Image 1 (cartoon, rainbow, N blue to C red):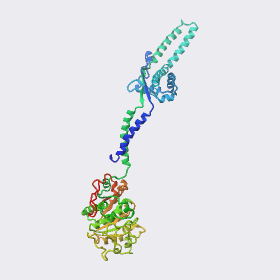
Image 2: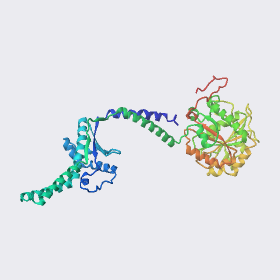
Image 3: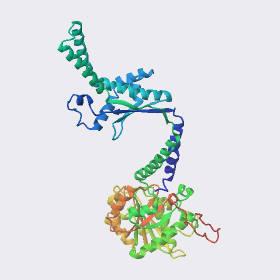
Image 4: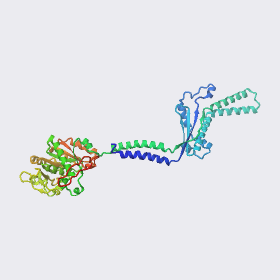
Amino acid sequence: MARRHRLIILETIVFVPLIAVLVSLHQPRLYSASAEVLLSTQNLATQLNGIPDPNIYQSPDRTAQTQALLARVPEVAMRTVQAAGVRLSSDSFLANSSVTPKTNANLLDFTVQDHSRMLATRLAGTYAEQFVRYRQRLDTRALHTARTEVQQRIAKLSSAGDKSSPVYQSLITKDEQLATMEALQGSNASVVRTPSNAAQVQPKPVRNGILGLALGVALGIGLAFLREALDTRLRSADDIAERLGMPLLARLPAPPRGLRKKDRLVMLAEPAKASSEAFRMLRTNLDFVRLDNAAKSIMVTSSVEREGKSTTVANLAIALARGGERVALLDLDLRRPFLSRFFDLDRQPGVTEVAIGRAHLEGALVQVNLGEAGERGGLTRPAAGNGRAAPTSSGGSLHVLAAGVIPPNPGEFVGSDALATILDELQPRFDTILIDAPPALQVGDAIALSRHVDGIIVVVRLNVARRPLLNELHRQLSSSPAAKLGFVLTAAESEEGYGYGRGYYYETPQTQEEVSVP
């Protein structure tokens, strides 16, 4: 996976930190200053009067968190910007500041950020001071109100000349006690550290570059895994073999474009080229596979159309015939017959006419002349009575049975007894019977036809096949009693690593030696 996606991993590793550094270099400078406020959890005023402190059982962390939230009220923010002499709204100031309780300590950290180093320092110190004053006013508000009432009564008695009365003396004592309690109650918060100098927090290109590198590595690997999970394409023959549970028989390159346009077969037009050598390798590997099961009738199918099924089976038939076998090639892809284009059989009766009795099998079988390279292949009639043609120099022959007239229901036709009878008649006459079947996943014809054959070959085009398709194809073929001989990989040049050590061959003596370079 890493080799397939190394480009996307490399791109994220390079570009993410680069973008982080470039963004950092274009950021305006930002400074941060901090001050600390000590919180007292002891209520000295209540202790002085012998009154139990109601907050003695409260969690210190909860107290600190409450005070941090209290410092964020708009009144404290407004008093701060007014005391610092800056033109800021309370919302703007709160957006650029924070109050954080210290862990395991009765301390609040007041932090302010600004584009000016001096202003950040001044605002942080002023913020801490204004919170202390705000806290003092809250803590002493009740005592201050009580003391004001006592002082008013003292003033009335003094104006009435009752300074010597016991009530007057009691009020004087009460006023002194309230003054002491007010002073003690106001010491529950105090600034313990003022900001000395603001530190620059932005831009930091080195730090952001390192963070960008770490993010790039993580993002690249994550994208690679995501792409791998979403990508249903198959990369190699090993992937296909694992999905189908079949061995690889051959890797076939795409036919030359000139041959494809003219519907010509490479085994007839260019028998000495590397593409033809690939079909001879397919023939050899098929011979080895058939040593175990002696499959005589072989169906060639694919998952979907346009995977090179018809081209593969036609060239394989020629390769087998040139190897000395008597080969019959049947076009049973009745939905989209194609073999007649390769062998000029458009006007020939086919398997459907033979099945309904409009033509004889001997008359419908057409022999392909395998002797002249470069031509499409001449057609000769088989010898009457046995359906055999005159053998080639190697002793082999190729007879083609076209599709014929398309029946109204091809699915029923491929499962009919009439077709089974035709296949039975071909058995003693030929060494190998190759059948061009429809794609297995698009119609049910191939599965129905598989009951009449000994073996199955699957053609897979690498840039067409997808994992879900092959999974479904494997599920359907597993129900067929025919032997799964293997698969053929077409357009193999798109396979990862294709070309190394493949295609090494020699041409015929009349032409120059040609070797495929890795």
